[in-house]
Amino acid sequence: VPPELPLQPGSTLDLPDTVAHQVRDVLRLQQGEHLVLLDNSGDEALCSVMNLSRSRVEVQVEQRSPGKTGSTVKVILCQGLLKSSGRFELILEKGTELGVTTFVPTICQRSTAGLGEVGSSKLKRWQRIVQEAAEQCGRARIPGLAPVRPFARVFDELPEGALVLMPWEEEKAHHLRTTLKAARTAYTEAPAVEPLTVVVFIGPEGGLTVDEARIAREHGAQVVSLGPRILRAETAAITAVANIMYELEC
Ligand code: SAM
Image (tube, rainbow, N blue to C red):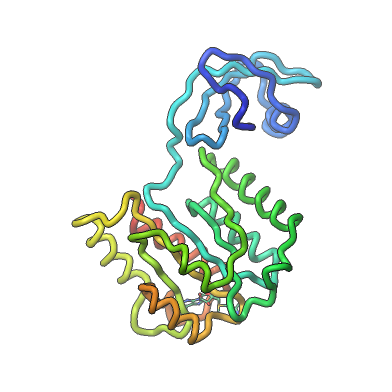
């Protein structure tokens, strides 16, 4: 729901039309049933349906508490822009479910789209996909969607103390799994930043170049393998984030 709705215990409110439609026509809740409302504050509000008609749905807030679906690790996914919008959107949806904190659409050397080619309607669509995925999986905070960035620019804005990872199809020696296990041990012994922050770069369909791997290494990134087979960009992104969460989320 919009952040201006007062989700305070004891208050009753009329739900905005789109939320009322979901409650009445999609979830088909009845009077007296419970639902959880999220206002992107990080809290969740347990509510009960008071009145329900074609024209309005009124709920009462019973309890407000910190959301339980946030992640203990902050993951910033810098995803090379893809030619296929559908596959980029799949990354937004699955990344949101897995707990990505911020998506950074990144223009890599082999991205076919440039800065000017991601218009406001596409950005709005991406924002909606992320929001719906967050609602679907009950995230109390919607992940951020940063403006489109050129690859080199992303390195100027890296958060201090972050673990920076670049899965690269040409890397054969270092596996993501080993790197994450070492990072977990190091972090448990001496946390560099709170919360643990991981920045991960995934290339576009044509992959990342030798030049990009060099730039990443020069900025302290660990270039890693995801295994012997070349994964589709969306498989690589989902695999990398799933492994990061598996190894590092408490
Ligand atoms: N051509 C395929 C496509 O259309 O999706 C494959 C793209 S793959 C080259 C895209 C990115 O996924 C790579 O730049 C890299 O970041 C990641 N990736 C895929 N397979 C990988 C592997 N075995 N090890 C490390 N990274 C990998």
